[in-house]
Figure 1 (cartoon, rainbow, N blue to C red):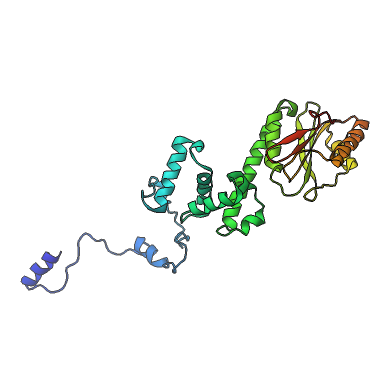
Figure 2: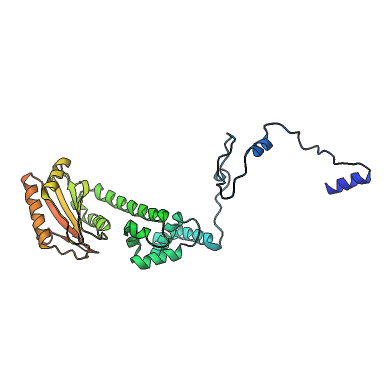
Length: 292
């Protein structure tokens, strides 16, 4: 184009020549649609809807997924994902699982130092997930999004464990039941009393927390337990409570309360199968210990 302009000047021609391959302006065309759309202000989302009613395809509809660069934090995240998919979750340490979980709450930045700090403070990946919500919120580096992500994973794990318990008769699936109860109660900082209500086939009808107490005591009312069993048409019960101290040895009050519930249930034809105390990595069955 520069050569053509110079050639025209040599011939004595003045002014630019019209380009023959550019069509004349047509109102309502693509140029007008661009002019009508205001430029976004600094910091505004670039995904705001245009004023035109026309639908624009998203990048994923016409472009393949582009992997993260091999350097920098995004490259590290890409390599972590590849490791998980290629070698499975067992290839990841606890802090790496937590690090990857934090990816979803923190799109940018290095989450490894925070993940390691959380593991060091709480002791394990499971303890981080089970930590009280307010404790996590008060932890430096965590916010609403990251705490929500942690609690969502915890809730999902408990829901999965509970589904496995409900698939088969409880008494024939004792190990799975104990795993579920441990996940739910072992890390509680105060005593919690739960009742598993079973049907005639010993399938789980409901798992309900009846009371929450102090660090070493939970008030239990046998009449309320039996009344709830009648409401659910349950024919059998399993009592469960935790000892925050970690020692599942029953107290005299635990034994007396169990006998009271057993007697109240027996009058109405409801069987008390067991009372389980959950400690830290340990549990005790009243039936196996000959206490029931």
